[in-house]
Length: 125
Image (cartoon, rainbow, N blue to C red; front, side, top):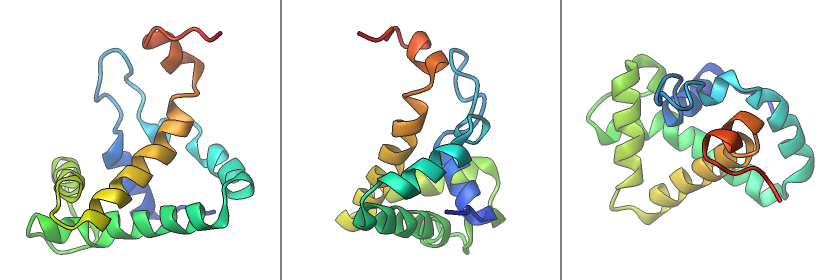
């Protein structure tokens, strides 16, 4: 799965760099592209398709929710984050579910990183 610039903007808005002093690295700074290769091989087809749909919705529908024209790449970082937040609290349950899919896939990668696990106090079994 190759990520386009709109996909990258969605994922970067989901977990941007320097959003935390404890974990300053953003999702796109952590080898997420390599994770996606494994995700593409291992994840069920339906889940991969829903993830793709979630990226599309984040890139093209989320900006509309804050009254801005799509795609998300035309927005500044603050507005990108606001657009995804609006999607997460949308009255349309499918949009809220798509944000959950984005967060789930991002968490599968980010939460497995040793530096993240150490920062949150999880040291394994």
